[in-house]
Amino acid sequence: MPQVTFIEPSGNEVQIDVTNGWSLMQAATSNGVEGMEAECGGSCACATCHCYVEDHQDKLSPAAETELEMLENVASERRPNSRLACQIKMSNELAGMVVRLPATQV
Amino acid sequence: MFSFDPYSPAVDADPFPFYKTLRDEFPCFWSKEANMWVLSRYADIVTALNDWQTYSSAKGNLMTELPNRAGNTLGTTDPPRHDRLRGLIQHAFMRRNLESLGDPIRDIARQTAAPLADMKEFDFIADYSSKFTVRVLWAALGLPLGDEAVVREKAVMMVQSDPVTRSKGPEHLAAYNWMQEYASSVIAERRKNPQNDLISHFSTAEIDGDRLDEREVLLTTTTLIMAGVESLGGFMAMFALNMADQVEARRTCVANPELLADAIEESLRFNTSAQRFRRCLTRDVELHGQKMKEGDFVCLAYGSGNRDERQYPNPDSYDITRKPKGHLGFGGSVHACLGTSIARLSVKSAMEAFHAVVPEYRRLEERLPWMPSSTFRSPMRLVLART
Image (cartoon, rainbow over all chains, first blue to last red; front, side, top):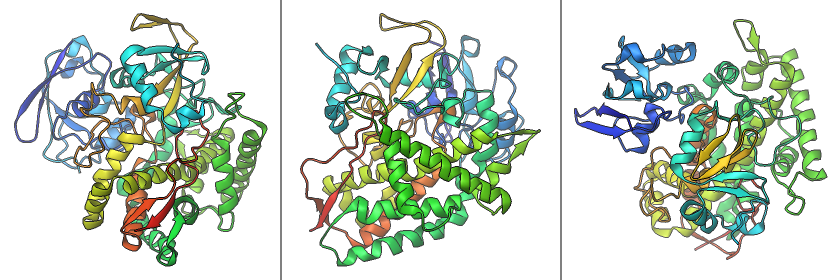
């Protein structure tokens, strides 16, 4: 199973095995990773699964219109590598990915 | 021979022992009575929710679907069209945009709870939650006052099924048809005189020339009324049941109402009213040694995934300090409940106001009358007594 490293707001690094097809948000919430809220359950409606993608950017599908609109609502600083974790699905191509969680989601 | 019949009164009353057997012994189970596969483990349900291409909602998402509904509501449409349509209306349901409803909802809660001060015994549903949910929905959707009681009666009727025929009976279909006509008249009125409310917004909303068509506006409105009245009311009754039975947890919440938020999340995990939804396979899938076929229906038993010890240790223990992230009480992924924020706000406001008037209580009936529904689970009556 491919792995993702989440860097929690505290700086703590957590390595998670992620089932292919699961969103990064789902992987984080079901593994108790700190710093992920996901109030809307993964429907791209709340902007509280904000993350900074540290690498593998070229392997990601670009953000769709709804995600781009929602990214305008993130509570922490929006950066060029900001994405919503519920919109990124795990695949073997993303194995070893590093994702940093922002200071706050609300 | 093990069987799982989501139409049986036994499952209405207590599905959890059945779910345990499913998870442990038959994690991909063909239910003859439901005529579909049943997925009961958390991980398998999450995989299905994330894989809409395989587990499609386009053939209906209710366990016992209503006629002509599939394809005409958000919950029964797949991406990419689903995402565009949902994008048209979901801003109205986001937490940050519900700020203006906070005080009105708290006021409705206080006013609705006040008469309970003079009652020693009462039915939480008839005497409190049914009135509360309808008033909140009316405020949010902008529905005309005066219709509340009959609309509620129809909403509760349309989600039920006949346990013997395992399908919608004439009374359920009649209620559904009534609801569509009602929604239709309200939509027509709002188009003539648009207000600053939800129905006005999504009957006129447009992105790049893409709009909800007549059918979609109608069925989305019908679904919202059903959700706001029945789903919200159903969950509120489950939460009140938990607070009645879990004395320590209740006392903690009465002493510190801010903890109601955590208790609500635990109740959503422990016994959401949204127990089971379905999908339809677009290709063959082999799972746990079973060969599911393209075209087969698959039940996603959220209520079971939420009690899966592979995900939640000590799952049958009600613990308001658990903070169960990733629970399936509101479903998950693209179709996750649109009303999540308004539900959390409403239930917290309702119970806070209730506890201010009735801080100590117990339920009077050992056995509850459970609603006969293959999808939802809530009691039809919850008689409480002050203690």
